[in-house]
Image 1: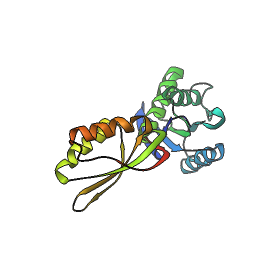
Image 2: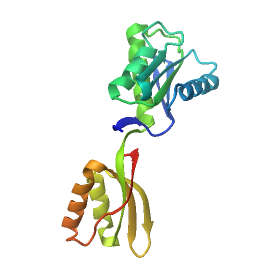
Image 3: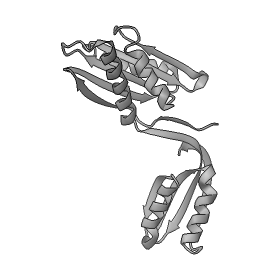
Image 4: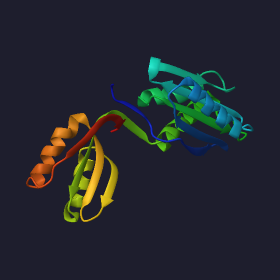
Length: 206
């Protein structure tokens, strides 16, 4: 399975443009049904909004859909979708809710506003990379713990769990392509005192 980018969490953010309030909602989804369920949830929550524009992209079968929800054609749904596509993010749904503030933004203004709404929604959802990873653990002394954290960060590892006892046991995931280099670097800087214990391989957050 090839690695891909998606969002980690359901989240939201907002901004004001010429008294119009734009709220960007994002949710990780796997199917068109899940995407539509999320869209319906936001529409129900903001039933009194002027518009609830939406777009989603699915990795399976490369499905891409968007809706202007009453805004002039091409000024809302397409910009929201375009931001998702340019960011290379999949398995995601974005809903851009607008409460009209009384001032017309014009076609260009709408495109910019909805593009920005999509951007802040994606950022709020925490963009992550999913890849084939190895799950490892290592146990180090407290005096080496900070250095180990720095090393894991340098190699892009994702810490899953940390247990503090007589020593510190760290469980983490790391891209398979980085495993050997990390193990060699750890042995080098610890003079062979520490190494990595392999647990399993899985497709997960890299």
